[in-house]
Length: 288
Image 1: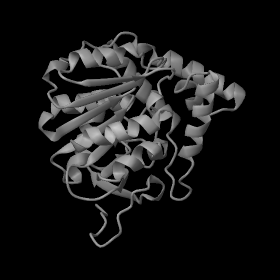
Image 2 (image 1 turned 90 degrees about the vertical axis):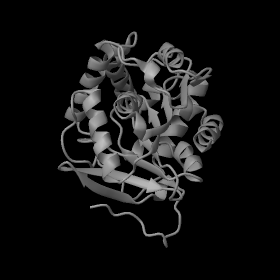
Image 3 (image 1 turned 90 degrees about the horizontal axis):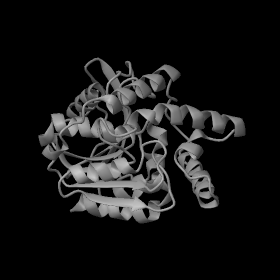
């Protein structure tokens, strides 16, 4: 059942206060949150590997939600969503389509990060009429060079983080120089700003299945991205160890008229390290 707000309710523009909702589609109960003013084309946020609803940076979400209807969601088998994580990116895109159409949306904008950007690409290729604008951050194309090395990097950094009792994202998303460490601590702190109705953590099996899907995507035959005609904004740091930064440049070359932003001195989480610069750019791009 869709438990959307009534028009009389005040507009919520703070992700920390966005109500937790669920909607059923195809036998799966999808957990999601929505905020921002209704009307117009909603911006659907596609989240990263091992992430749940609690992993979106409020400094990215809130500026966009000021003037846009924002929806974040967990795909099947992730966090509080029921079902099982599928072992392919394309199947994840099918689940995302089920969720979006269950909400009744026929035209959307997409904001995606990392694994979410792979799912977004698969979705727009399969349902081009659904997507108006596309934001791809920290991600890469199907069959991209060294994409399948994500697994080794991920496990290595999880181990490094465990040895120092740090959040793995501090190693995976940020450079280990002074500026990167400072940005990492600030980012992790921001993720804790929501204190009530937090999401369920991802299960180990779900995380491992996501990694298998990424590996399969990385080794597959490249997709024809020339068919993506939607205005596309691509962003990353210049030292992405998870999804190599050259893959953002590859996407930019292959998606006609796309825009590319590379933030110097940053890694996979470049958009979070440079949120003060990137959030207004993304909001302006989506408002065009």
